[in-house]
Length: 331
Image (cartoon, rainbow, N blue to C red; front, side, top):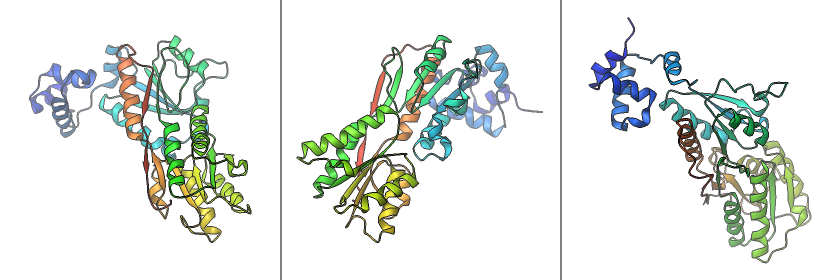
């Protein structure tokens, strides 16, 4: 016979009501009590009846994690996979399921929203269509926008200090004596593009350096594009002695091109990336990069979304998580 909520209550020493609340309203139960209840439930192989619970609460107990098709699949994306893991961890704690879809999966051919009856809330990551966000909010489905900024009333945007991170990266290269600094700029959402791009140009100007347009390449944010772009820079008569790449994947591609050209990193060409993804510690030499706390971004996005689902009012519309320059051997 399968275990019941009464069995869990007896096992952990809490009342049936407290056990129920640990699953239906976890924020109203102390962390110590929740951990004890969940441990008892696990030992008894107890699983709350999700359908019954959802009917009582008039919720689907599903949220959507919507990523742009250019960045899909999220589980293989070195930047978005840690964010997704943090969202899933917070969702599991609340007995919620996470549906990972692309922006192409959101709308039906007639323009209607496919997910409107299946989700209690939505996290958009990266690029997002404002018209879709408007439709979701008209249906009273809370939305949180992650790693992007849109000027929309009462929309919570969680981003990071992209501009300041780019400034720290270029200043670091200048401090190492570099004067010919290239930029391999991956095509991200407009807000991210503009911030990192401006950080590069503004810092060169502040350092009294003139940006050489031949050193600036706008590319797809992929390993292959990074390698091809770096190979192109290396053909210049006066090649850059350092390159700032706007993500770690592009930087890894750039490093491949330098090594294949028989040059040394950082002696001949120094390279700095952005994100501090797992890629930065796989490459050799290890990559100097700008760290984004991806776990914090995902956790915060989930926490804020669940607060909105629970009816909390929006206290702020913009949260900026600071970046940090991590200096390793590539520079």
